[in-house]
Amino acid sequence: IISGTLKRIGMHVVKEPHTFFDVVCGMELTMDKITHTIEHTNGTVYHFCSKSCRDHFVNDPEKYVG
View: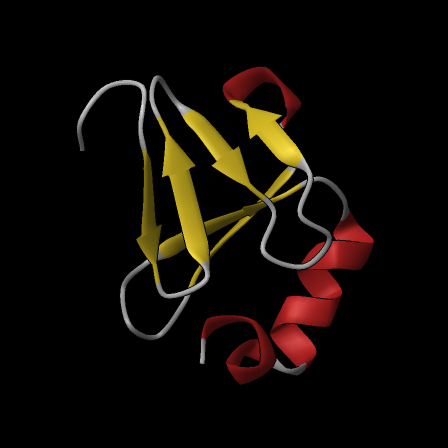
């Protein structure tokens, strides 16, 4: 990842340094704001702002990564 740029991995967007986007609601998250995390079957780790967003992802992950 090149510093200062966005990299899209499926629907998972990462911005340096250590900034992530919740794939469900689109909220930008820094490490101190991440409350829920899940490792998807493809090995990618996704971060969420809330249990609700995590639950939406768990119920239909292909909607967000496909």
